[in-house]
Image (cartoon, rainbow, N blue to C red; front, top):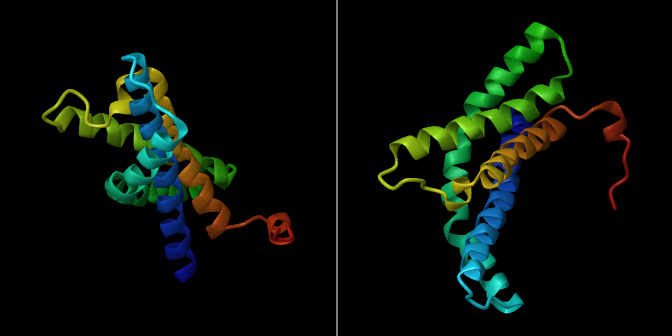
Length: 152
């Protein structure tokens, strides 16, 4: 049980970190499009600020999404006997796409997460769920050859 909880926590954290950086870059790109100069120092400050402030919020979205998606992935992998890892990757991505769609339909503003305003942003943000699914399965149920890999 501890392995599952650690894998789940690391999947949420890893996916939230990547999603936060993607969201930050989309916001900065919108400012650059308005001719606002953004240098590397400002980019790094914006990333660190968003990791501290937006990261926990996106992680709170990921927790129930992954909880539901990973249970469905586990059930499907047992029922259909197809590569387990792909079910977790697919469930994470689809689960997050559904969560973003649901949140955006309930939010008082047109779209809660700015990166989701474009198709590319929606796909990239949803792919963070797929990344989280990969992290979870890799840590929870590693393949035999993965256990033999040396750590750097």
